[in-house]
Length: 561
Image 1 (cartoon, helix red, strand yellow):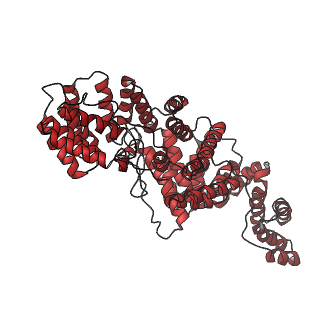
Image 2: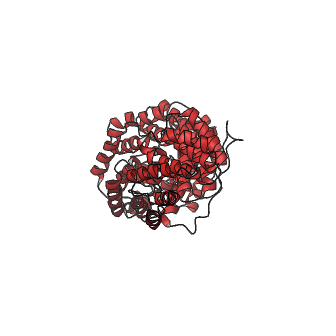
Image 3: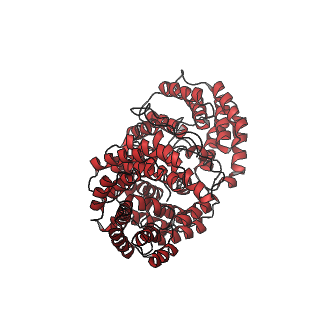
């Protein structure tokens, strides 16, 4: 969401900054490659062909797959959270009539969280409506062990036995289901059909009439009721009932299935449109659509967080903040809301930011974003060893973070690491990631300015600086070339570069870089070199103020609504 201003090269590494705390994912490819206890048990989840689906359906499924992918990338993943991600995707596949993939999702969720009855119930329900009745019964037995008091359970068991023509078993169980208000109409509907099969026409008519009184909109009941009247010899009433026959079943008060059905109602279509507006960077319209959707679905916390992001990026920054605060008022442990509010506070220099991000880590020790921004805070504050701890946590994540690798070395350096040890580690980073320009920039400065004869290598520094400028002739790289040239004794060349940079400083706005150039220029005119190699004033080697817009734009939301 949103676009960041780039001034004079301070933010030239923004695309890499965005790798610091987020995982770029797509909706393509199989899901299920998981290291750990479930590696050989989880089923791979192939990609469905969505080309013919509505755009909103495509976005919903891709979003849910990405949410699942993010959980699979965690090391180790939380089985309960991972089960929830599989289950949420399974709900969508079931809703949008992709039952084979829905079943894989539910079975994986059940494997990961076997004590949660909802996954067994969804598998059993899918089997029941797909005609796999015996499998459905086995699944319902599992549900009965986990949640025997779930009211719709007896109704579903009665339905299954009815489909298998086990009428006595079905009647006994359906009589239990008829005791509950939310399942009584449906239970009576099946009991009436059992009476019909047993030619108990009078009793069938009585209980089917009651079913209609409870659920008058369930016009499917008219068909067996007509058959009951015909069996009683009442042809006029039978014809009347046949004329009223339709396809609406009695409604069942089944919370898990109602959750499933609610996915296509309420605010979801508007939320899908809002996300499309976000993709087009139309944040004001996105905020409007999120608000409209929340009027229908006010309890959708994920959509409310997405609204906060759209509000910030459309310029309503204070309202964005109060929206996040409202989310935390109802869900104090919502990790994404805590993180985003912490980012707002960090950018504003508020002392509460650290505590906010620390709470994120109490809830999720591996949260790469919170660890990264806390590390940056600690580095700016001179708390170098604490910064190293948080950078280590960032780098333990599955996704590499090129910036964190360099910032960690800067923290170690200022914590007392020798130039030699620092250069050794820096060389490893560059060998493994030759396009990590920040690492190369840091190496130029260290090789050009080190006080350790084992490290000082002006020739190598100049060679690296020239490579940087060829790759990207931005002001910081030209500054590095000036330093390397001066280190080689070519002060005139260094002075010429700095004068050119100062002449073009208006491209960079006001800030620390032009001041550094002026200081370097004075030193070079005296044939002196600056020290130390990695000053804390360097805006590339020490992360500066948090770019809220970049984070609110790029940080992934596993479930945006």
